[in-house]
Image (cartoon, rainbow over all chains, first blue to last red; front, side, top):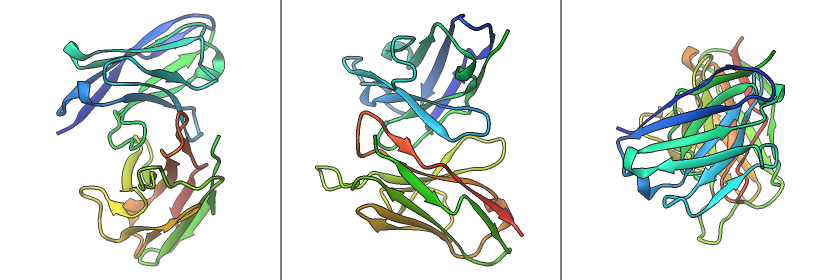
Length: 116
Length: 113
């Protein structure tokens, strides 16, 4: 069955960096666009970024453009999100999901807290 | 950006009674291939969102048949025929038609009266 498992979250100071990972299994990873979505405490989900199956297409929400970088390694069935210049309002649970049009599978999420 | 507006934002329901949530989009959600990428998600307390309904009216695998979706164009509805205790949580609509920015509604909190 399809599984998505995020990791890499934690506590980081404002201005710091973190790299999130998402391990995928149960489907042909390279066939699918993948996305990152986050959910701040008490708020609804916010789409952040997606990447095509061959990494040729990437897109970002304005809120993270220039600070976050999405990437993938199809040989390792893994999706990544490099987060730089983190701010307090980046505090959220970060989810990887499959297919930005469908969002049919979500991981359990990883919590990122940006605080001094 | 496409704005998704849900109502009501809070929905107290008696066990066994029906419930209905409305979702309105600021643009029509029919894609060029004829599909309408309007989905409904359930988020139980402390859990990840789970997709219940895809492309307006298709129940995802394992979703009880008391959940149904309908609508077209810009107006969509999620209905629960008889609410059970396990249905407590927040329900979101999401559009995936207009890229690059998929967008979610504000969420509707369903609680038991």
